[in-house]
Image 1: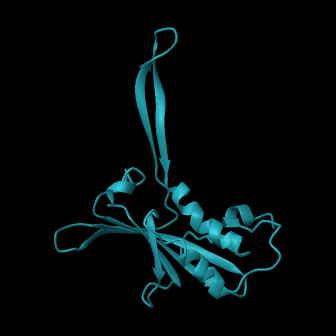
Image 2: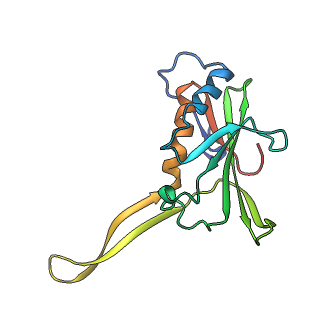
Image 3: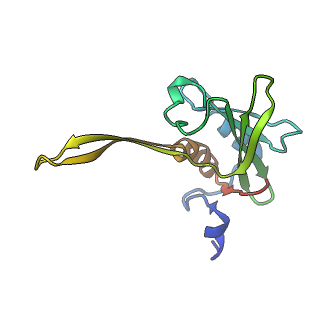
Length: 166
């Protein structure tokens, strides 16, 4: 691991993994993450998306709404992943669209590494009777993206969080 790997946002697999898996096994490991309890749907990427796999986030699903509290209801979030077999690396890039009107015109869009953190607080009385804020819950979209990264690392590949392009 080089000195600039921290700035490049590359996560390497643990030392206990003997050899990297084949690209087909990495794709299979990521597609196996699909399920009724998953906050995303991992699918094959189309030619216009420029990615091998795409994780579509369930932003509007009420079960996952607390994780996407700061995201507007009409937003679309995606994590696009491209496999680089020569480097045994998966590059990821997040895309976000916000629809502007009923016809589906795009209001705004962006790409990069998106992270939404939403804490929930309550005002309570402390031991001395003084009011204090108590944190009830903290939702973080990084907790949702970690299984994608862990599946790649478990296959012996590295995970690169890209900022501008795949």
